[in-house]
Length: 309
Length: 289
Image 1 (cartoon, rainbow over the protein chains, first blue to last red):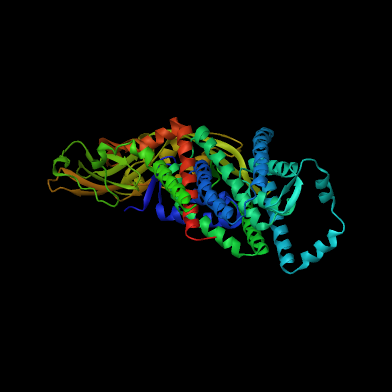
Image 2: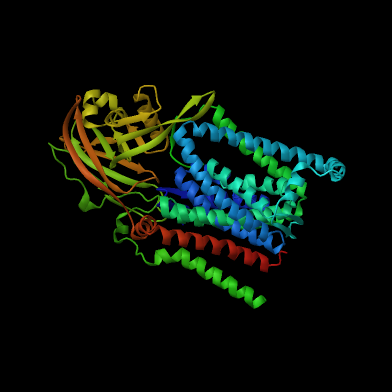
């Protein structure tokens, strides 16, 4: 059997084993860290000869499969906080809608690409470094002392959260806070994700860990739950508006990604929360470095296809 | 509980298969599939399609002259046979339908490489392929090559370009586009690979060659031209059409995506959910956690 597949929407034929391998690798990362993996899959698909707009849209479609598989695995392990997830999701949809309008205004004002790219690099860099340092200190036992010292004097952030109305208990995450907090943070992540043209998993995971104070394993499962619904929305919009979803390409990627997500989800429960955070921090920093290099090093060609992340 | 799980699993698998096979069930394979070459298959010209010798003109035959693109299509070889008057060089050009291409331009701003503008190339062939019996420059003078749109320089000159945000001459963008197209296999010039040899009668020479078409092959009617050239002048010319078509299944899927986006999107989402949840259920039932 010919190991190549002709993709009619992408207009190219691509090796089937290559696509399955890509799906497996990215699905594994998705199940392990609770991220969609679009930051990795989209450029890899472009390198395999898929046009950027088709790569980005189809990636959303395959993430639906990987995140459904990973979210179900985490749900069975009791790692999905549905109440928190739904509030974040509602905020995310609201923020995403606002973010699209902001992108329009930025583009009209000019220099939008510069602002977006530099903000993205700075944000990934600061999130990655913070997570890495925090996890290393925590593994060394420094954090426990700090937490004990801080416990007698609540921070301004904690006091502000406690003053907000609509207080709710989130037993799965072991936290109690106003329903406005996850909604507003979800909206901020949605807004940033829309402005930067990414799924938002990278921003959502640190927000859940550091601002919502959720346990790392529940963060991964709940993030996957959010990624699932975000990508269903994106796939639908791309299929109806831009006609750039390549169903056949997505199917082949799914074959690998659903199994990869299961393996990743199982491995995540065997790692300590701080080990997971260090690995995720390394991944975030790698993505940041890749973006930084693409900004600093001269490109092979000054012409670039339209679209993509 | 176990029974409920099995029912759910069966439902997911059935919906996944339906989503996968549904669109294909409506479509039949193309009736012209037999004219297409299987991957890696060598094109052979049947005896009744062998070119007839002519002392005055050129003769060109392509096998196959219709390529059917199915889901397992990957590259294609088209065999070229023909006749040119004895003592002539041969040049063969394959040109796809022309279209408009929009791209972004990267430039350096504040020390960083960013998208700084947009460019539109018009009158660009989807694919350009050129074969010749010797290096093109030694067969055709530059003026003649440009008039006949033979060679990559001529293709470049035939394109038009409009850009914003680009301060240098637009010609440099055309150079960049041609270089990118060569790298991606859309523009190919294989000079010296078209074989010309005497048929023994003395008045005509046979030509033989092969066109290697890439996997990134757009649908359309391609124009194939054979030129017989002597001392920089074209003595004879023959043309053939090469038709590249999607088979019924591929065409059906494309139509569905373009005309019924809501249905196509729903199938894509359902298939993804069924695949993800199906594997999740299977993995769970095999005693994970």
